[in-house]
Amino acid sequence: MSFPNHFIWGAATSAYQIEGSPLADGAGASIWHHFCQTPGHIANGESGDIACDHYRRYRKDIKLMQDLGLQMYRFSTAWGRIFPNGTGKRNQAGLDHYQRLVDALLSAGIAPMLTLYHWDLPQALQERGGWCNPDSPKWFADYAATLFETLDDRVAWWVTLNEPWVVAEGGHRVGELAPGHQQLTEVPWVMHHQLLAHLHAVAAYRELGKNRIGLAVNLEPQHAYTATAADQAAAQRRDAYLNRFFLDPLLLGHYPAELAEIFGDAWPAALPLAAPSRAVPRLDFLGINYYANAYVRHHPTHFANAEVVPPAANEPQTAMGWRINPEALGELLHWVKRRYGDLPLIITENGSAFADPPLQNDTIDDTQRQAYLISHLQALEEAIAAGINLQGYLAWSLLDNFEWHHGYSKRFGLIAVDPQSQQRTLKESAKRYRTIIANRGV
Image (cartoon, rainbow, N blue to C red; front, side):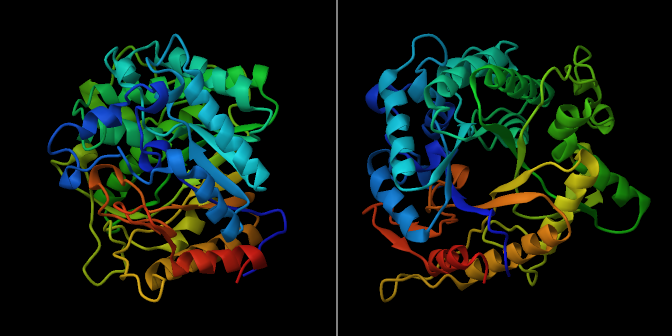
């Protein structure tokens, strides 16, 4: 492989998954801190109270990033560290922490990409309705403006929201993620208010910022399981729900027509299928989080009358039960270009969880993760050669971390982290990635 000289190499994390110390220095509790306290929500009763202790060990972790040759590090700020109550008086200690983190990254020659929201809404705002509250876009814009005013002189890449669809689906329909609701009627409003939050934040950035602002969405090609009309229609419905729910109104100006059919009476009459007006450019780049594709068949009792067919036991898959299909990543990038135009794209997340072998001779030989990494980078190289405007790749994740409702049972990290000792160990995939970065390919 060979990538362009300007191609950006990096890795990504999120605040609640690695920081630990969620209430330190005057921070307010997030919905994840609250969610983890309820028995039965998280595997083994675990939480992000300690996680990777990155809040206190970030300088050592930045040295590891330097050792890997990372050019960019994507992280998120915890809203409750800046505004303990979500709004109102800001907590200078929390803001100072992120200023120190950004300054340390820059001193190490690593460009920060700052994500403003990676699922950890302040619990105080959840108690006021959370993303279902029509005031939530303004809450978010005010929080975002504070970060813009403080850090835009040092942060050149901004991400407003991470995976808004997962916030709605996992947190409000399925209930396996915070805040743990199972209310279908909440989903359209959660999505709509996140859309408005992104637009309000971008409008604020056009006034306050001078660099780039974008969005990170999880996208997943949906293939019909068979050639039957029923399965084809089921795949289209799931594509509308997962892939187009946020991007169509953001970039085309309307919600997918299939949503009215999917939601039926749960689609609020007060919510139009037309999107808000396009007063300002809506993004400078689009971040894509890709992990797998799906095969879909019609099912009369499943949501949207669509069922995702799990991979067979002999199909390549990760420890999450997700198919390994790097070709679908290239397919996805071409679909984005056809549907939404020639946008600057960055892979803001891509990675794999496997049951890593034990530490031997001071290393962890994670051959499956190495193969996953290389095959997906090959797909990206082919996409660039075919004219896709892809500007960078951020591996998920830098560290083994708190993997939401799975606790610490699923390991995505290039760097192993022992939850008890906090010892860091570069896996062989990290060393391979270091070589790839140094040589702009393999």
